[in-house]
Length: 511
Image 1 (spheres, rainbow, N blue to C red):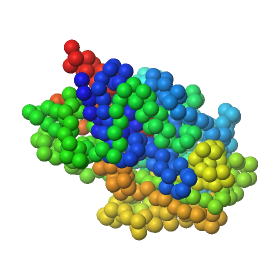
Image 2 (cartoon, rainbow, N blue to C red; image 1 turned 135 degrees about the horizontal axis):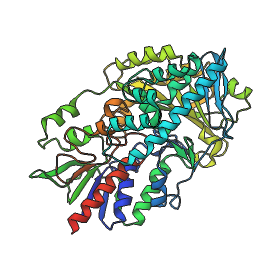
Image 3 (cartoon, one colour; image 1 turned 90 degrees about the vertical axis):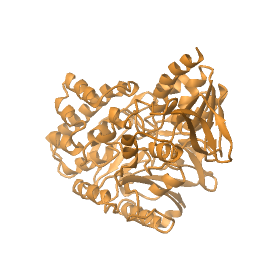
Image 4 (cartoon, one colour; image 1 turned 45 degrees about the vertical axis):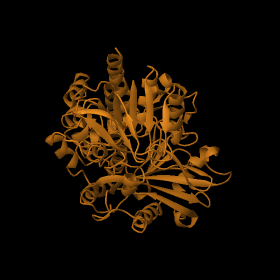
């Protein structure tokens, strides 16, 4: 039985690894010169290995590592020490050591009630994340079922806001401190003032690194090693992975997927086709000549939110100086977050939704060269910066090399209050805009999650119209990308679940 997989992203490679265990003839077709999709390493500065889009490790599921023996194939995640510091407005901070001791907080006038509320909030989020996590492997699960699970465990208020409320509303229930509220806003993929952000925070709460629940870290050699270890594992089982091989169309005959057409004009016959691409690319580009149900076409063509995200990478002459970090004897390891004031988060959620640049950037950054000697020449450094929210377009136009300087200039300006010498230590800059996600990395929606990580696209609602989990209206055509049940971030869940469904399908076909 022949299976053709479109795209060499991490979910596609997870799928290939599991199906190969069943002895299926599998070929992965990747348009770029390397696998990984958005979980990829690139040498954008000479001698530097840069995790250009996905940077931070934590969401990738341990079962996949164990089943596919990814440790044997080069995957080496590690915990940084300390864990994280959030730089708050007005010079405060929330500093989390790795030794398990309490978070150190400097946030103006803090009362005992504030600190108790902070702990109780995170306690409930952690409990909720632990309850929700198993359901990522159960693609028949509805949003209402998850709400019921939280209620059954006594998390009634959290349940009432999981998909219908905002993270700010939940936090206000526990704590009124505005500086701590700013810190909480950094812990969800979208804006904490928008509906669905409670789910987003809980989604991030399902992280685990090196066996530590809720922990995030880095990967030795860069996040691209997740994808590379998956590739090695799949190839060791006989999977063919073809790079520089772009699929231009899915062949359909009598409502059934029969193969692929490649950019070089070649056609390939397949018994099953699986697309790791985003829904827009799959249904609008690869199936452009195929008649699809009207409701599905309408959903695919429906405008998505303007809120996307971007990345900035700086090659450094030396490490910048963060006075707050130095006061704490911080070693510049760990993850560093810049949190805007909560009221500015609310204002920017409206601005970015209208396609305008945010006035106050929310950023997560790391200096992987401090903890990993393999990602840069000896003595050299770079920093990776996530800009949490950016408009998908620059005032209605695609981002380009000229307008991307607006992003880098805004990042430098936002960092200067925390690292006054930031501008003078930068030697070179590489920007990944939402347009780059679309054009360079072939994600048609221009969003690193393929679809927004909001209530509108969470769990069962992530299934496109007329599509069962991972299935499509086209017989023998399946989906396994981040636009399916399980969602965004480097989890591998979509590839894992799709593989379980297809293992049953391949057994029936061969029988």
